[in-house]
Amino acid sequence: MTDADSSPISNDQNPTLDPKDWDSFRAQGSEILDVLLAYVENVRDRPVWQPVSEDAKRRLTEPAPQEPAELADVWDDVQEIILPFANGNIHPRFFGWVLGTGTPDGVLAEMIAAAMNSNAGGRDHAAVYVERQVIEWSRQIFGMPEGTSGLLLSGTSMAQVIAMAVARDHMAGVDVRRDGVAAAGRLVAYASDEVHVSVPKAAELLGLGTSALRRIEVDSDFRMDVGALAARIREDRAAGYVPFFVVANAGSVNTGSVDDLEAIADLCAAENLWLHVDGAFGSLAVLHPELADRVRGIGRADSVAFDFHKWLHVQYDAGCVLIRDGRMHRDSFTTNQSYLAMGTGGLAGGAPWFCDYGPELARNFRALKVWFTLRRHGLRRLGEMIYKNCRQAQLLAARIAQEPELHSAAPVALNVVCFQYRPTGGDAPDAPVAPVEARGDTQDAQSQALDELNGAIVTRLHEEGLAAPSTTTLNGRLVIRVALTNHRTADSDLEVLVDEVLRIGRSLSAEG
Ligand SMILES: *Cc1c(COP(=O)(O)O)cnc(C)c1O
Image (tube, rainbow, N blue to C red):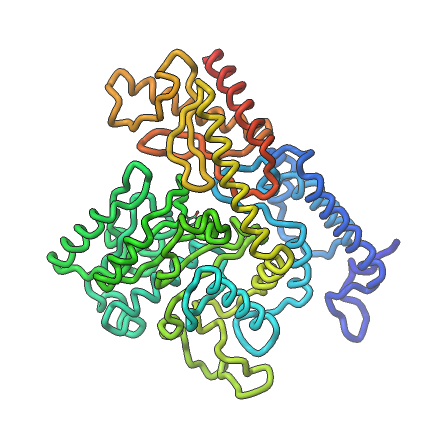
């Protein structure tokens, strides 16, 4: 097959970037799709992760190409230096951080959106209506009132920025958009010690600074101490600060803990504060009847940030912010530029436009993969997958409780399990992982050695491609962390994980 694509600038009257030979392109495209679907279908047969090869690293630093290449050659490169070195999160034994799995349906959805190549920033076309429907579905999922607005974003990190910006502008009592944040006085916000790093980042980005984000202590279940929150608000008011924003966790990143949303909502109502819920993954527990109670009160929030790409398995990236009062949302972002003037009809109609709900003007058709995934699987089945992961977390916790060398490090609220490996002969078998402060000096060296051992176990699991949990630090101790947002995980995969942690732990302790 000779492919004239390698010289798109030809003597044609109208050179374009389209294939010269559509039939050949179509055949190659179908083959690529076949390979990709097999890649997803057979993921279990591959290692969870392997390091990017030296050859791939070298080739991925080559200078920008000046000349065209054959499709077949580019695809060969993809198969050699890109596809084998994936993140691992589509594998059934990926348990690290909080990463969604995606679906084969999402592969198709991305392809459809790419063919349309719509810009969902505004104007009157299907992408805008699809996004509106996705936001309306989200509003219904969380039981928020009509008039709630929303915006799809890259993830919860950006959703927190939008929510905090709207709250800041509304609560400041001055025109922040015109006069800047300095005019807003001494605004302060509140979040627990378990808050995700994206919230302090949002405070920095919005000109408030991290010192304006008060950290409230958590209880032994890693939930915000609501009494301490109330006290801090009182103190701040007395000192002349202007409290405006409270972040509650519905599924904290470290342990999956859920703050007492009802109590915090009551306090925010009494204190006239904006309640924002970081529900990146945990908020979706609302989709299963046996879990919904754990996040009760979420519909009372002024804003909710959550992800479709974690526990709803939409392909990366897809997050969402919902703002209870859509008018406030628009007030923070709407502009009136002549080149964006909305017409009363034609393509320039269809107001309001999504560019009036956030800083981005160009926006991809992210809503399609969300819509497609929700249509294909339905909320009930997606909720069952969430329930399955929570059940598996309990199963894993039960196995940990049985193993003398494994020690629970936090209660299992939803889908996150934290534990430590310790060689036998140390603490009593059922001793939970004690906070650093609770340990004497002589135990500190031992604690540090244990932390290092657990870090080494996780690294070894990754390097052998067996499983990919991550680590975190709880009460100053490094622990192995398993976050189950993976619809592909079978119960037996968790047995494999525990068996391998024990094997590697024993082997490393014997070496050490
Ligand atoms: C993942 C996560 C975030 C950040 O979300 P992104 O989608 O990665 O931007 C924020 N909060 C919590 C609790 C998370 O788990």
